Image (cartoon, rainbow, N blue to C red; front, side, top):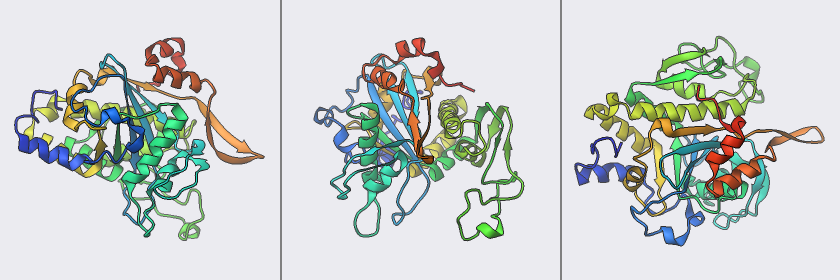
Amino acid sequence: MVGSGGLLVTGQALVARYTGAIETGGGSLIGGTASAEDDDRGSDITGPVNILMAGIDPRDDTQAPRSDSIIVAHVPASMDQVYLFSIPRDLYVTIPPFAQTGFAGTTAKVNSAMSYGSYLGDGTHDVQQGFQLLAHTVSGITGIHRFDAGTIINFGGFKKIVEAMGGVTMTIDQSVRSEHLQPNGKGRPKRPECLSGGCDHPYTGPQKVYKVGTHHLQAWEALDYVRQRYGLPNGDYDRQRHQQQFIKAMAKQAMSRDVVTDPTKLLAVLDAAGDSLTFDGGGSSVIDWGLALKGINTEDMTLVKLPGGGLYDNGRYLGEQLDPSTAEFFQAVREDRIAAFLLDHPDYVAAES
């Protein structure tokens, strides 16, 4: 939006209002994963850069957060392209020790890393502190020794952004049935025997169905669609693709003339962003990042799928594991050679629709 005609940079008060609502102010997301030389770089952002994004459901500070969506954005040195790849939420990994909480480290699903890092010792949790352990964990998976920026996306607030934009147009690539919602958007009732818990699939009754084709989705539909994984041929791997497609569709919608040239709608979107996004630019403001990335449009976003499958121990499911070939992909990320890698491995390019 910063690069869309100067709509935000016309007044310092307006800039301060929205950057203050989104930014952490203390580098408290990527923490020790950022190098010291980044602390004072200001607007001097040069590629390649790697941005870690985590999506969480709304929770209060008495509940441990879980990062059910983990996406890395890689921008090459040319600063004219962005590659998105997802880390499977159930990836079985080594979660390193974390001194802030006295956590000794373990092997578990990656989406629990934020929980292990969030404990404050008084029964409450700090999501931003938890993100630091998630960043360390993803660094161990990918070999990316630091992330240049990080952001937490609260799905409840994210819904408000889509509402402020008037919905989002998406191309749905496979029929998806909602586990949670009825066709009218209301929650599906639970079976009587599942009211006290203990059921893997407790819901019953009619289901909302998302049919193949291009549709303009209301906010509740879009968020429900990208949360679904049960009943999909490839489970969470299909959901990862849908989440990436949603990000691209949402970016395209946000940058459309219907939004950026409508001050009322634009301000509503920014208000919603303040409620749903937490951003740490590694010493650079969100405005600096916006200006640095202004040459990228939604057609320059490439979605990447990482192959993997289930990991079992004597028949017991532990989680997911990535295909050994992903080691070569992560090396290409670190060496800023993703474009060349994808030419040699076209199966890594995810479907856009």
